[in-house]
Image (cartoon, rainbow, N blue to C red; front, side, top):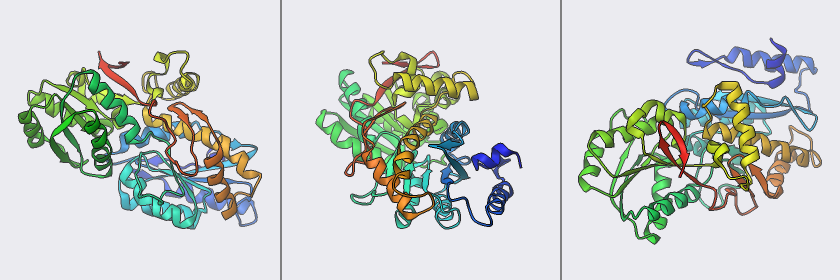
Length: 396
């Protein structure tokens, strides 16, 4: 096996699946080299991403950024074990179970899809293993002791959207969103913000991630004629409902959530998405941030390194979350190593405690400050409103 692959502990997709033989060989090789057991110094991180299925537009950019991950942190070797969850909650749960039972990971990262991350959370909690999600998964109070989020909450991003709507004089909106947890959370968390702003939801329509058309839903919303429409979808899938609204002759303003803050929106939607308003973290428009913005330096570093690796103009909200995960690990691993050795329950607990006490930390997507009572961490000022102009995102 190539030494770099052994060192990173990463295995790669081949065709539509994952090269399981490479991964298993890595494990066997590592154990043989250490007398049949994993090296105690190794820090193992299990990463479950949607590399296939309708969520692949989010998972693949996260994987691309993880390929730039350093081989060591604080002098300790770090192994990333990346699995495809195929945008399937059941597969994500199976990945999480494998991470904690077979790979004995010190932390889980994932998934890039809210419904999949939610399915993984019970397993992470049961195993006493931190889960660092790449999606804004909502959990009942008290159920997120081991779960921390890299993305901004829907409430934080909804705040930016509603404030923009107020400035635009919008009084009524239509909601067109996923039937799954992501859509449900946006509907639930934006409702009080809209009510407080005096904005009424006069049409609510839902669709599945796998749907290829939303014509009936678009017709109903167009007939209601709201001042604006909020589309809750992700990646390339966010373009389809947007195009449907335009095709049905809707002339009002159209808003998209931070899961749509990718180049796929313009690549798939073309001229139909011109003028769209999209809420995003600051990493997407790093160069457009004022010099006073705390994330500007970090966001530019992310953009430059990512686009050097994958191509100019291909920056991505979710790749930024992977970059921020590295910032987290570089800060908390040294803290945890002072308390316990990797591969132990004590180390896993120390990682959680370190994340709750790491204090103000600048991410590419804003300033993070997790606490024992807040595993979201971002402030209401985090969201940035963008507009699609000539096929590019511009700060509003």
